[in-house]
Structures are given as structure tokens and as C-alpha cells.
Image 1 (cartoon, rainbow, N blue to C red):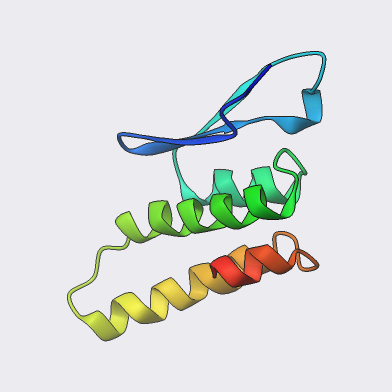
Image 2 (tube, rainbow, N blue to C red; image 1 turned 30 degrees about the vertical axis):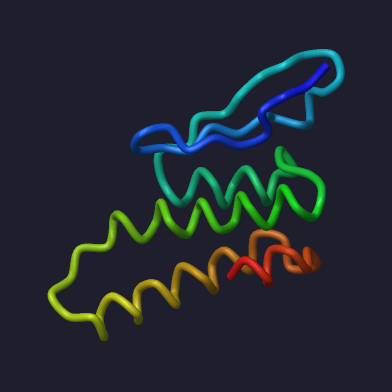
Length: 99
């Protein structure tokens, strides 16, 4: 049996909810940065590589929502997203590699 653990679909991220394995195959649709952070924090995503890839996808999703007029403003807001992502699971090394 194989599962898609993460998929970028058009304008959102779809994650396998690993809390329900092996009994159920349920996917979470993450339409914004916060929902990705919550999925990582709430242990819906497990395993170092999956956490890293999910964090990177969440940051990409968050970056698409930043509306500013200068690169400096964009970078300030993006750094803030990185800090918030890091607090989702502070002991996950791959999360910080992705950030």
C-alpha cells in the first residue's frame, strides 16, 4: 500500500493525516500558511523528511499571500513566517533545514 504524503494542488497543499494511519486514509487540505503550521504542530505530519517538505511547502504557500511593494518588506514578512513555522515543532531538525 502506498500513500501520497504531500501534494501541491493549484493553490493549496494536500497532506496525508498520518495520525489516522493505518486504519484510515484521510487527507487535509491546507489553503493557508496557518493550516500547514497546525498540521505540523498537531502531528498530522510525521517523519523528518515529511516534516521538512511540508514546512517548505507551507512557507511557499505563505509567501504567495504576502502583498507588499518592496523586497525588504517581503523579506521581513517572510522571516516572520519562518519564525512561526519553526515554533510549530521546535525539535524537528528537518523543519529547520527546510526553513
